[in-house]
Each structure stands twice: as structure tokens, then as C-alpha cells.
Amino acid sequence: MFSKETYINRRNTLKENVVSGLILLMGNDETPMNYTDNTFRYRQDSSFLYYLGIDLHHLAAIIDVDANKTILFGNDLSVEYIVWMGAQPTMRELADKTGAEETQPYNNIATYLKNAQSKNQPIHFLPPYRTENMLKLEEWLGIPVKDLKNKTSKELIHAVIAQRSIKSDEEIKEMEHAVAITKEMHVSVMRATKAGRKEFNLAGIAKGIAKGCGGDLAYGIIMTVNGQTLHNHYHGNTLESGQIVLGDFGAENGMHYAGDITRTFPVDKTFTQKQKEIYQIVLDAEVNAIESLKPGVQYKTTHLQAGKNMAEGLKSLGLMHGDMDEAVAVGAHALFFPHGLGHMIGLDVHDMEDLGEDLVGYREGLERSSQFGLRSLRLGKELEAGYVITVEPGLYFIPELIDLWQSENKFSEFLNYDKINTYRDFGGIRIEDNILITEDGYRILGPAIPKTIAEVEAERNR
Image 1: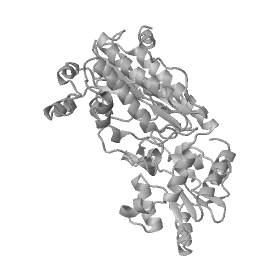
Image 2 (image 1 turned 120 degrees about the vertical axis):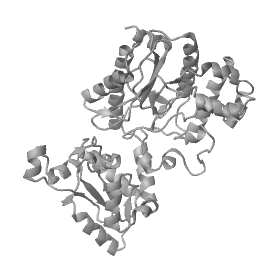
Image 3 (image 1 turned 30 degrees about the horizontal axis):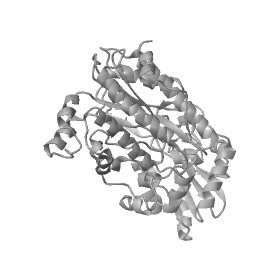
């Protein structure tokens, strides 16, 4: 945990932006994997962590704006529980760590909320994403599960997004730590790669380092020779000479801050000429995008510029032709670049996505596009100092998509399908870093991770 003053100050800021009533923050419970006592890996709710910092299950909190106090709801452990799980802090000890003025047993929360309802006090809650919390809200507030989404507090959602979007110095320190662990994961995987190994051998190395450094994975590992499948979590392929491996994975450190890094590297000790050409196009787009970042820059514009840069590179190889401004405007380049340039990152790898992706990444007057490729851009609005974002351009050759577009003769004025089909077995290349927006520009978080062709090949030859 951070100091209790950090959590008190965070809650005070929140209270300044929620006019009246109660703010209900729900922690997460343990979830059975195949029976009650065999649970999935426990992960506390990120907003609960942000405002309370307590990483234990079966807790909830109410920030009573009108009474100007925080009540922590939970139960002290019985001896029977301690026999199995060991001694744990008392509720009062936990409250002292986070600066909560009061504690009450967990079941008292229903009465507290019903009393507020009887007085017509507003009860603000965030969108629930776990079924058990949906059912609790239905019981406590009398709101059917199907109506919960429409009853969430827009006032609270906007206040939380505004606050959590700007990372403090102590948060940046944690994110630097997460990226430093992530570097060790990537470098170790690069060094261990060779023909004949399985993808799951490499995935195991990455996960072991994350766990061994006191954290865990920030998200499911993408480790694949089929990089053209954007979120490929299958790890059963055997590496073969001539292939490239796309590794997209990151550590969640002990304070639950995430790293999210992608590197692409050859199974052999060096890239082929064909791989080098595509790799350099992606790398140039990534570097140029990062160098353009500063407060006030609209990230949608950066995304489109990266798309144009890559389209121009593909044109130089004969894969595209015509006017690349026009090609990007209509989305022809999305055959190769069908996702967004990046997203916010923090306590969540897609930060605050549970609160509403468009509310986090867009603003009034800037709506998400419906165009293929561009519609997958999670962050489109102007950047502010304190944001931490990912920059992750990529180029992919997806045979099924190529076949569909070619059968429709789609964008043939920009796409050279004859040349494109010679890349059908290429796979995909993505390069990604985590970037802090500073007052006058940007800073790449964490230690440098091999990225240029020369650096990657040097790591492969260690």
C-alpha cells in the first residue's frame, strides 16, 4: 500500500467532484474455478485499490460525502478461518492503514444503503463487471441486474476517470518497476528462443519471471508465430527456422500496476531481408509516433499519421499504390493495421475499461469512428500531462482477411493483391512501448528494451 495520506487525499479529491450522497466502492470476492475452495487467481477491483489500497477479498466501502467520512465494511476472521489461512489484520487495523474513520460488519452495508434510500440520498456506484457484485447490488439497492448499467452514476464515473487518468509520481514509480520486470521477461524470452522449442516454453519463462519478481501477469500472454492473429493466446506451436515470434506480455507488479510491451523477433539468430523490411516500417512508425507526443496532441491524429507512415512504407515495397492520404482516409491500410495505436494504462492494462472505453478514450464532440481499424482505437482524445499510454503500431498479413477483401475487389485502387499474396505466410509484427506524457513532451517508461534490428539480433546471439 501507499501511505494512508495518499488514500485520504484521493478520496478527498473524489468528494470534491461528487456533490452529495454516498459513493459505494465494491471490492471483489474470490471466484471458484471448478469448486468453491479452488479459486481463480484473486484480483482486487482497481478503483477499490485506488481509493482504499486494501488487497483482500470480501470488502466494500462507502464514502459518505454528506457525513464526510469513509466506512470500511468487512468481517474480522474467525479462528476456523485463521486455521486454514493464517492470521490477518483486523478491520480496524486495515481501516487505520487507509485512513477510514469507521468500520462495520459486511452485512451492515445493506442497512446503511437502505437508510440512505429512505432519506432520498443519492447512491453513486460504478459499473459492475462481476456477476456476484451485480447480484449484491440488486439485493442491496433493489435494482434488477438488467437495469444496473443504466443506473450507474455518470457523475462518479466521470470523476473517477478524470482522477485516475493523471498518474502521480508514486504511481509512475510503480509503473517503471512493472516495465523493468517486463524487460526481464522479454529479454529472457528472446535469449531462450530457438527452433524446436514450443511457444508454451517461452510463455512459461515470461510468467515465471513475473511471479518470481513478486507480481503476476498484467494480462494473458500473447506468444506466437502466428502474430497475424492479434490476441492469440494459443501456445502450442513448435518454433521453426524462418519464422518470427510476436511476444506481447507484461508484468503486474506487487502494487498491481501494469506493464504492456510487445517485441517481435526471429526464431533464427537474424531476421530475413523480407522480415527486416516490414520490421523497419513498423519501427519507424512507432518511433515517429512517440516523438510527436506532448500535451494537447490528439491521439487519433497520431494514430492516423502512424497508419500513413506504414502505408507509405508498404507502397515502397509494392504492396500498396496510389495516394496514401486517400488510402488512409478510407481505411485501405487497415488490411495490414486493423487495430488502434494504443490505450491508457495504469492499474488496468486497458486502464479503466470497466468504466466505459469511450468515456476513457474519447470526449464530447469526438466520437469513435465506425470505420474498420479506426473503430478499434481505444484512445482518441487529446493527451494531458500525467497520462500513461501505449504506442503499438503493427503490420499483419491475415490470409482470411486478404481473401475476403480480394473477393470483393475492395480498395483495389490502393492494394496490390498479387504482391500481398506473396506475404500470406508472413505473420505479423508489432512493437510497443509505454509512454508518460510530461509537461513538455514524453518519456518512455522503464529501462530500454531491445528494439532496433541490430539490438534484437544482438540479443538473439547472446
